[in-house]
Image 1 (tube, rainbow, N blue to C red):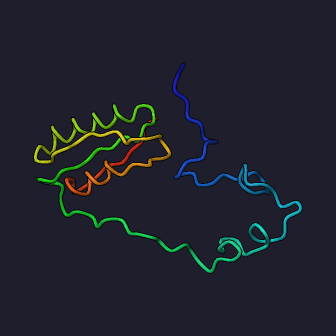
Image 2 (spheres, rainbow, N blue to C red):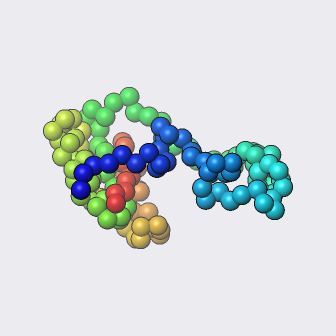
Length: 136
């Protein structure tokens, strides 16, 4: 089958596509809905009862200046193909940044949950960076 370009697929370059005279596909229609966003609030405003975005309970770690001579944990969370991807990423580090130590691990528990903290404690104690990833 020859390659074909589909120009009716949503992409970052194309932006959100709209049905002629209506909202984007899957976003409902104006029938029976007050003007503005859901519930009549101004479009783009916070949900009712909230004055703004939720407050973060913690912050991400600051960005490292370099990965040279650091230990990077490559953590597969359990989606299909994730472990293989992390092994490929480890190979890339070995070939392109040999001073970086990589440790490939699989997150314990299910894909969407984890009741144990041993892996995260190990990463905090021994690692300086982590790639937490999925594949599919």
